[in-house]
Image (tube, rainbow, N blue to C red; front, side, top):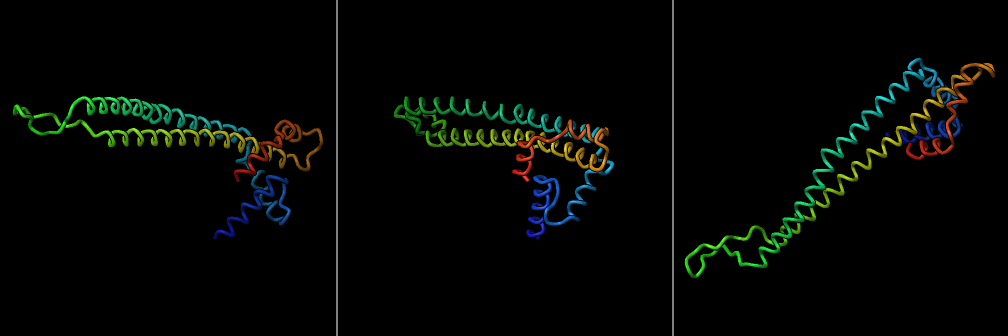
Length: 189
């Protein structure tokens, strides 16, 4: 249940922040095995994360183009409509009744309150669309941090127990994860 999820989260958090689990050596060994798995090959990871980043970036572009831009236009159009409705309703009486000379008068296009509500709803829709795009951008930043952390951690684990001048140690030095990235990953885990 929820306690198992919290325990897993705590173990992962301990591993992220300390490089090992302080509560359980088995957990630390399991994480080490995960990072030394053949699929944790740096080239495969890099390719995987580039593909994922490109897909998320494509989603962001689509949201901006297919959702945010039309909603922005909707706000403009509803504002224009509101101005026309207010002007038309103020200048003449659209009652839908027959005038004294027997000519049917046109009914009002829309009442002011309904049109104002339409404007407000379109503005709310725009805010929601902006929040959606903002969350996709946040996902891209988190993905970048997570990528750096996984690559750096995998290199560190693979370098354990190797000679000081080994290729694995050199790779681990190059991919060392800066503290701020470790903190960001820990914050969103």
